[in-house]
Structures are given as structure tokens and as C-alpha cells.
Length: 186
Image (cartoon, rainbow, N blue to C red; front, side, top):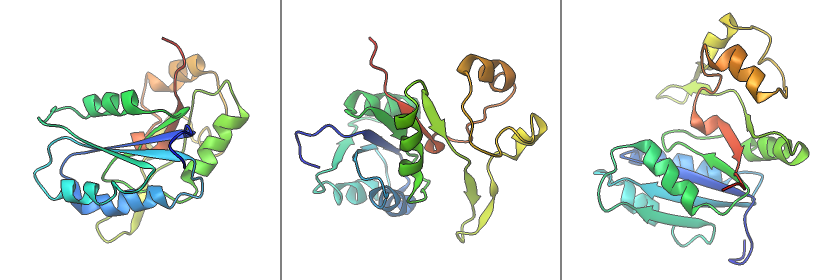
């Protein structure tokens, strides 16, 4: 991606003391089949080897690295910082202790591209053990609300979805499973 081009997706990785996961996380982003993205790596004053790992990606033209001078104490402040730095039409907050399937962006961005009235797209997440074994989906609690609702792709009115499900439980197992449209308002 040349510097003058605006990326479709801004991928934000907020990190604090996740050095043991960073290479896998960043590698899973850089290996996406959909490559129209910028990668914003943030560090909130980690005390492990995170800084060295993040700095090792700084030469990649798709990557921006930012280190806090003092710990913010709040991952949401890091999310906001990343969003302020973002240039893309879409935002993906990719948690630093997670990783993704190489088709993740391709699949979710294609939904957002086809359906301009869709605000965000998300997918199921798997919990993974220390030995990389897939343990289970992260959202089995949703079956008690409606066992079939999340079993295939769907588009719904956001207000109805909130009234039906979000007031009872979050269908979004984690931030890493969501790609959202960047607001063009205000």
C-alpha cells in the first residue's frame, strides 16, 4: 500500500503485557487474504518484551506503532486512541492476545461492502487452549436465547436486535470478532 492511498480497514491492536501472543496475533493480521488495511500497533507501557516485538514491525509500510509514555490503565482509552489514528472506512479492534483465521477480513469486509446499511459484521469466536486446541465456541450462552438465530448469516435491524438480545447478553463474544463501519458523522 503506498502512503497516499487510504486503506479500507484500520486494524487496531491495543497491547499491554501480551508479548507471548504478539507475534502470532500480528502474523495472523499480516497473513489476511484481504490486504487493503493499515495496522495500528499500540502499547500501554508494557513491562514485558512487547515494545521490542512491536518495534520489529515498524519497517512494514502498512504498520504504525505508538507507545504511551504513561500507562492509561484502560483498554478503552487505547481503543479510542487507535480510532483517532485510523484512516480506514472500517475498523477492526484486534485484541493482542488473540489471533484470526486468514479469511476473517475478506469475509466480514465483503458483507460491509455489499450492504451499505450494515453498521458492523461479526462472527463466532473459538476459545483456544494453551496447547492451541480448539476448546469450544465462546458464545454457547446464546443458545438459551435463540438456538437457531446465530447458526447462519443474517442481517437485522439494530434496534430490534438490541431489544431482543443485547439487553439480555452480548452476542459479541469479543472485540476481535467484529469489523465496524467508521462513522462519517461529526
